[in-house]
Image 1 (cartoon, helix red, strand yellow):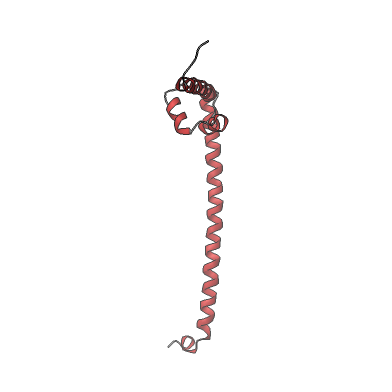
Image 2 (cartoon, one colour; image 1 turned 60 degrees about the horizontal axis):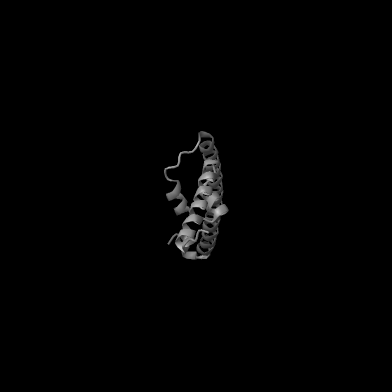
Length: 113
């Protein structure tokens, strides 16, 4: 029976996780997906997988997902920015109407003095 120290058992565990991470990456999974599946920090995955060559099919899968995510995030951001711009414009209009109402009641303003 082979007895291993705790550090050797840890290394064997890490090698198994690393092998699974490599397999998942070669299948076209993102670091975030691998992190979710295996619980390995993205920084560790980046280190482990930095020199990994992946197939064109996996590259296309990753690129397609990234492009779709980027476009949808950009659309969400633009919609939010438009909503915020309308809210700011409405606030400015309300403040202007309030200020104009005060000025119109001021006889000195109305007479131009």
